[in-house]
Image (cartoon, rainbow, N blue to C red; front, top):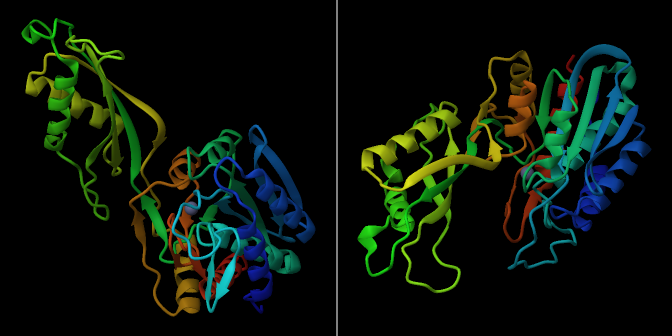
Length: 375
Ligand SMILES: [Zn+2]
């Protein structure tokens, strides 16, 4: 078979997508555009799955003429806000040599363009295609993963998946993320007799500075992940000299695969006891919650991708573990589908002057096509 870089199509789609502002919460316009394109390309099935208000997931399918496995191609429709410091208008794609600048050019309108290019190629060659491509594009990844959560709640089946996130060196596992809500209950007293009360804020302060004593677990590929206090609140609403009897805080903890919720909460409770704190501490887990995940590298699909990658890029495929969370943290544990993050390369991720390398997108077009037609 002759695989195609689909240069013109890819650049055209990328430019169209960057032009549409799809900052989280505002994904319906881009969703409608992509829905139209997929219909125009001639997918066999397509639907909009309602997520919240006018926000929706796009689920589509291309059926090969011959029987074979189902491959999920997935990605997110939203981007982070543009922010400041841009040299170009973030919503006007600007091409300079191999680079295309714009908000989302890399994360991950590049990935959606690669997916659409793969779909185009697959439809043109359906007679030789074994199995199906299942396409799932979702909003809200950059916030609380409402889109992928809706998708999971409606059941989804595939043998293997590729999330077209901009990971030129693919990601096969990642830390999880816990948001721990800590309440400290003390006892009020007059401010001139603080010893008669239990100062919830001071107790919380003692607790927080001691968090570093909790032993952190390690993973063979992910370094230890510290506790980070994100918010603390307590004390009067209107000035008064009263020992505060309540304080709460939010602590972020990125987790490695062995750091379960039970383990973390147990360690925190033990810390309170060992320190002899007098306030009553109550711990709970708030949303958003992301499990750590890891996919096996000895899967036949991964072995296949390794050889295709080497063929196209000219270097062996290495594996990385993510130090941040993405929709895969929801998708992989909930469905059991092994999903690798593999896509374009570039710079300015979540910051100013975001760009993607066109060459890397063309390479990914070939890798995706070769994978789909490898059965
Ligand atoms: Zn992303």
